[in-house]
Image: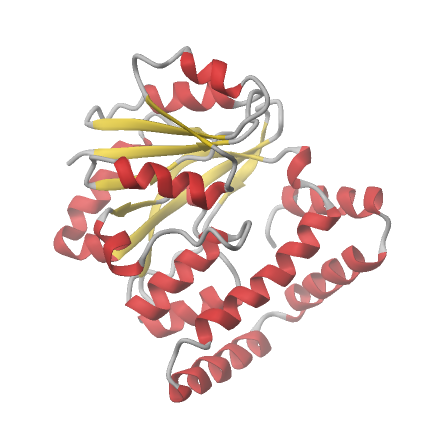
Length: 291
């Protein structure tokens, strides 16, 4: 099976070379790499051109991550779509391990979005910790969807999915600005019956850097998540809306008190504290090991 690795690129000159090299060094050989330069104003295009004999390069006006991903999806020739963010790194066995899991599930695999564990690294590539994703494979689809409504899981850089998902569910939503991965996951799982499927491997390095650590971006994200939940829920029948909202309310009540308290305090502090202070809190929160 052929895998298309699509890399949306916007002003990623600091990390892009390492990202491209990680895609090219995959043990699994039946791949194509499509890098979509989304109107970068730095040296990203120059870096991409260094690899023009080994990758496909698309140049377009800036339109956001969803727009860049969609541009790559429209020309991909692989059977499977593999997302890779331009500031992240794939481990050399990533595609190989994902393909093995796909083969295990056989026909069921085309109805899944696969995701895995990954390492957190800082802007210099230094290892922070391993991020262990939750495994809900044994849960029934409804309860998995309730958890997804409560919070996002399944890092896009670790994901892979069959190309037919875009024919059935549509492309990424280009109107959101960001959190388009969350909207796509919810749309596919809740409205079209797909499953998020956990692969118990560590397959990527997800980079935390300063452009992510902003108070405004975090507060906007909280509002965006609420908006995304609403637009998905409203597309369900009234009975299903009630069923999901009731289940979500009960799920939130059952969370351990220390987790609920920590999240409430975190979100409240972001709303009232100065930018420098709130940025530092977010950095600590992202680096903190789960308890």
